Length: 199
Image (cartoon, rainbow, N blue to C red; front, side):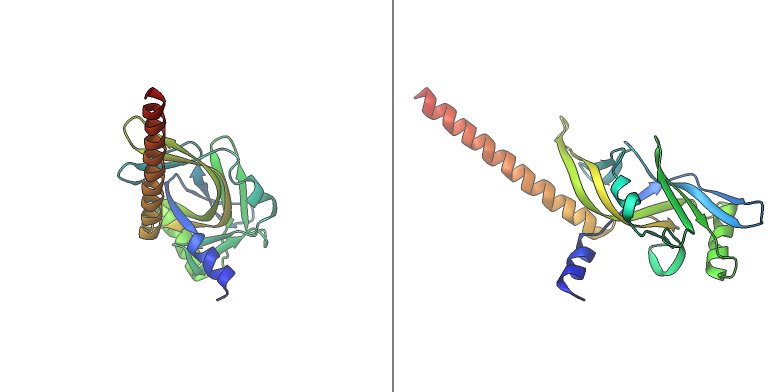
């Protein structure tokens, strides 16, 4: 693995979404899974005092030129679809990131996933991405909220148990602590200036 690949792998994060998936069959009998892989302006609770939301338009650059996969449980061996192969369609609308996966009828794993979604046994998803830009807000209750304004999307996944990765929680905690340290330092500098000016 090159340094660039290692850096990219370390920068990738996963976010979980409660969603409403649907299965459908087209006029040719083809099987599809459709639903939202991300919902705009919806709070994702990362941990105590930390939350995120995804802003409308955050996926637009990725959708314009990216090659994105649909996976089962983030497993790269279980590919359900791919934008490059036109077996995964993704688009943004006013609600969020919507997707349609065309299931390969010759892939037993994919058909099994479709059946699990159809029965309601699997109804959640996650998306894997890198954060390109975001805004940070310190709220009155001392919590921190990040609004993600642009991502580099790598994959979307149909999941049994979607969850934040421990590394993502740890990274956000460290980021919050660093921001708090900077805020405290800036406050101290302001107070020092006030006291010096007052004397």
